[in-house]
Length: 116
Length: 113
Image: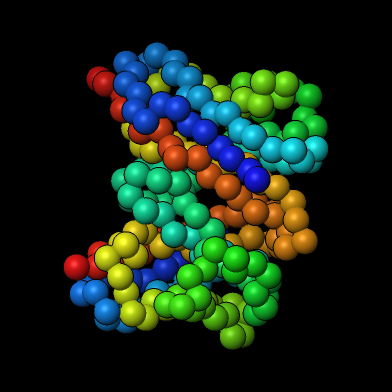
């Protein structure tokens, strides 16, 4: 069974500083993908970054980077130069492939609060 | 390009009543997903459609929940009768096909009193 664990229910960060949000996963699949989504108070899930299990380099998208450590089964999100608008819930998700195509399993989320 | 549309955005009902949610996916997207997100938790997949066929409904409480996507475009999710524990945000997502990235709608927040 797939499992995603986010151990930080809430995090504070000072504006303009970097922050790391933790994510560990459990799977026996060889091929899988890891996603990070942002969910502001409006409720919509906004895709941030993706890492495939066979990607050798860590993914980066602007201020977001994913610290992928396959042997440790961790996929931490690093946000550099935090902004007030980064305050939101952040979800780590794992995609596995099955007969139906692909399924997303989400972690419990981390609430990030950026302080001015 | 228009995103995934959902309505209503908010709904308040009493337990044992019925409710229906509507989703319009991104044009051309064959795969549609319904997720339930209980407060403080991550979304949980309820049902996945490929065009108008169901490919995964293993986590759908079929005694009270039903969903359809008759013409392979719009979809409705129905709860009948609602229970207190159904209070949640119901998210709809779509993807070009079942192997591509999922795009989410704004969700419908359901409160059951």
